[in-house]
Length: 301
Image (cartoon, rainbow, N blue to C red; front, side, top):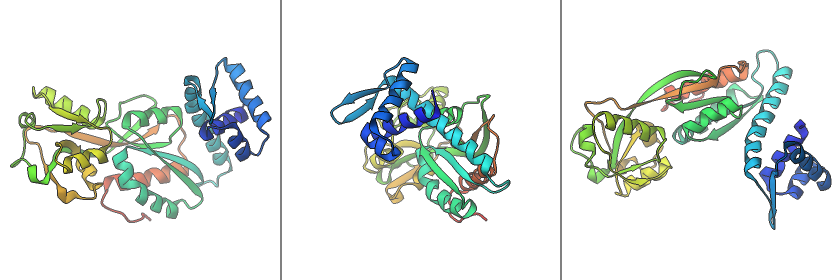
């Protein structure tokens, strides 16, 4: 397969149409179709299913899209790196963050990046921590903020700060004073699905204390969880960074746990084998500053 074929395939996948992709690429649609068919022939896979509105990816197509995006990103990085001035941050960098951190840091990061790296481009991606490490290993992302990342030889992990989990409750239904984990069994909880780092940490701590959690609602979105708690539909165990993203904090009460350390650790994670560049170094410094001081919004010098 060729890089052109991969780039053409990605354009068709993203636009869901051969005609739209051909228009954007500036080539004839038959030529684009031939390139994609050649790719399918070489891989012995059908990559697209045709329908009345255009095309949609097959399972094989979805897998190739993930690989292809990583390949194109790495090739672009190589081109930019070879043409870069020696110590000036240039090119494109992809930063990935969990939803809460993305909500907190995207605006101040972009504001600081514009000042610090005026000749570079920044792409911010959002996903759960388990997905972020996969993106780093596959080359789809260059830097990531990750809660409690699994140690892997392919990753370098730098802990930034530890965040205790608190019980967030409706303002008019807050517990009277600090809670033990044993007390927690009395409260209906709104929690993310299994595998989410906040739920995993709470379940581990509860299991060690011999406590059965009462999970009434499972919701994958942290903002939606906060809305449900504020509406009186339950309580949530989240970090205080999540509370900083909520528009109406006065509708929530925060209660600490006593007798147990229930914490998450936010880390800066980078691919271990990828050569550091001025752009990655400068962006990593901006991320570390923001993550360690989430209430500071000024642009670093």
